[in-house]
Length: 456
Image (cartoon, rainbow, N blue to C red):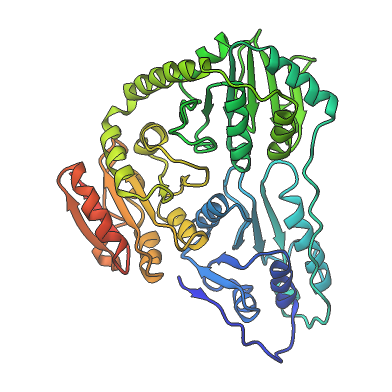
């Protein structure tokens, strides 16, 4: 549970482990999350890569997934096993079982470089490469390889023109942005402003458009109000999301996933990179603006907030206060807990993508490593925090000043894996009221370790 970096490998013999490490470096990877005893770790450190060692595969995977989400770069895990469930983040898992097809160090170079390219082609995903121990220890005198990344996929101009014609004729357009649109924030914002179209995002697309933008309805994709708004629209543009458009509504889908393209000729499917495709679509539209969209967005935003309060009202105030306590471009980490999915998703506004992620304390570790100058805070329910002792101990050993706010949210209660925060070396304080969080969070950012702040 430490970060190791050793650039003084000088004249030491190069090995298959060096082949893997140098190939990662040649492809822009400078940080790997690993577990103690993994045979690759010593090779990575000797080659000058930063290695964040964590208690087990689950913690390392969640940290790497948050690193990928917050940084926009691939996360790499030296793991005992392959991915367990990391959604659509670009993650490379390197195992050392010996059951794969890699038999030489040169083959390891080709396989690792190919995997890094493959997981970024289409929807980002996790890829596993197995490099046996004997290959890691082989002598190697070859060269690393930087994979040639594919150019951004852009649809045929005819498709762009058809989509532009639909949007130009629309009187009530609506835009939905998902996790596949996080790199197209500027382009989507310019597009909705030109269209005068309200925009709602999914939880994965939170922040693609500033939650405070006059045309934004926030990360409300799950709410009935958004489905109703889609049914009342004459055109719905969906970017990087599997959002289900109502029957009978003209839909335009922009996605790198062919399985999300419209079937049977219904709607317009634009198979392409979100950034490049939205920019091309914006370029095909006239530079007009309308105030009608702001009025529609305000009504949709109000309806979404009332619906979110139906099951998340108990979490509204704590998120409001945390928003005041965290700098605008700080990162908030949540978990598999009601305070996140019913609370922070709706009531913690962020101005840009990659500032909100799930994964609990391990994700906070990954976010801190990805953006060391950016403050990171955690908000969890008692159930999500109950088994976090080893995760918290890892953050303590790394010396990360993370405020971890814990509140009762109906998700259960219990000890921190049988040990208290103090048992693992963290600080612990209590907030009697949500308003107390502003000062306590500020103090936590000045500490030399995580601070658990129990609310209530």
